[in-house]
Length: 522
Ligand code: AMP
Image (cartoon, rainbow, N blue to C red; front, side):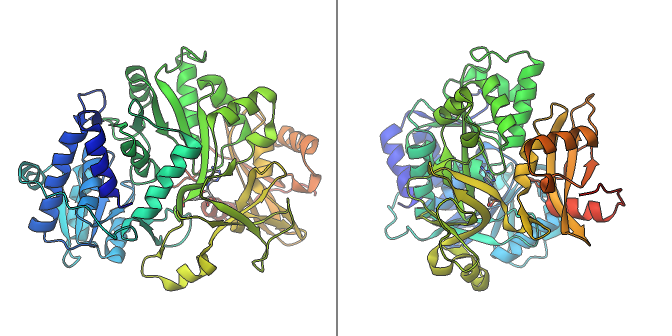
């Protein structure tokens, strides 16, 4: 199950089929891509003198070189360390040092600022993928094909968790982990064939990047958006150019796509992005109202996954057909869930003592699956805490309902305990989002001398829309228990988010601590 072996299999099966393209430009075939990949692999091993297992950091925006580098790293039996290109060079330097990377691939402005920041890291070679050494590597001889044996447990992807607090930890994912992720994807999310296209709009340094694996396994085409990120007119252009195109997009990006379609007045299903097969979303809560808006705009082409760096993209999933049917029948319970466990995943809901809770009760989501990481890089203590007995403690609180659907409440540290009762922010957020004037909302607990913690909502209003606390309070009173309704509302122009679109609740807690607010009676 070594990924280089699987890629070589695809070169045999799909040699002259298109494999990789930049925007709508002519694509490289699998055979052409293979030659480039093996030339780069030889350069990494022979010219840059890397040994099997050495780490190569990728600090770059989305580009076709990203896909080539990844396959070359695997062919050369090295380990890829993807970092989000929006990180500060000092944060990237931390990853480079912690992982002991021998090479860092980058380009553009980031390359220039990294040259200044990381030059003191001993033994590190910084390479510009738009520079001469990369070009001459591609012109050089190709490394032989020598099928990897016994390489399933080699670390393929050392992924530093984006996290919302603390220093990131390196998640060690093996070739077998990623191959199993790809099989789950084809079984539970989207079955891929040679006519499928994956548009890279989300950062390739995250789940969107490793979703390339199910595509190259089945002879699909990867297309990198030339802007290197999300540019709505460009994306909609590509969705007109290609057929059967899918993309991974965080829920906030799906929201931006819906807004863009509205400005183009493309809300009718067949008019809107004819080439779109599926928007794959996940990584953060996808609220019921937002799902309905996305299905109204794009039709039955929205699927959702729940995973985390430690079991990438693979805990549960809900396919486009199920989501569309739930919208049609008004099954909001299903829409509020993150679907069914993926094929190779066993989910247990455990209490604080690590014991299974009764059916339907809430506890920590715990995962057993061949997709679960080997452990954290150079951090046995954190590994032992997170993988007791080999099962992954996700830190997410949830329940499995009588229909087998997994419902996520929140990260355990974000659960609000007010007057001794647990309040799950997501439940309050779902209610507030029903108000037409509310664009985004995030609910946190803040210290309260009387109740321990009290519920506080940070609200972003739609442009030109107005709503006040009284209206939001009335909505809450009509929908949820009184003690769950926010005691404080803070209206803000936007929510702080990390580079993958997750709301930074710690920043909200700090923001709240810095302001004095009037309170309502409970
Ligand atoms: P990361 O490891 O940075 O990808 O973050 C993983 C975390 O994001 C999970 O543990 C969840 O808390 C959250 N998450 C991922 N997917 C979903 C989803 N579909 N719905 C709600 N939260 C999600």
